Amino acid sequence: MPFDTEPRSRGCADASIQAVEVAAYTIPTDAPESDGTLEWHATTIVVVAVRAAGASGLGYTYSSTAAAELVRGALAPAIAGGDAMDVTACDVAMRRCVRNVGRYGAAAAAV
Image (tube, rainbow, N blue to C red; front, side, top):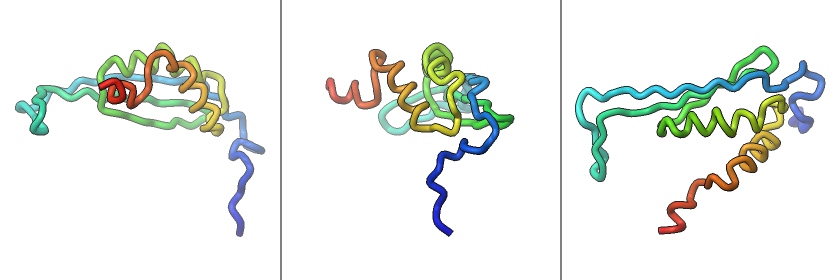
């Protein structure tokens, strides 16, 4: 059977993004942790849930609470109401909204 190349949302229920929820949790470590270059006493995890078509998708990253603010203030509004099944369109919308904020590699390129 060949792969279905049609968008997954075609013929499905409305997959409009209904909500983007974000939370950041800072968890203290039992003892100082290190990777040999830096020592830290807590780890922060940013968790994002996206709801559409009666389902939720969950993602997370280890980052600063600033990442949660970026999701809440810029990324979530950029995809609100968009088609959750159109990953490319969501990616483009989020990349556009952070164009002047910076992208990965920008700091490394400046060094």
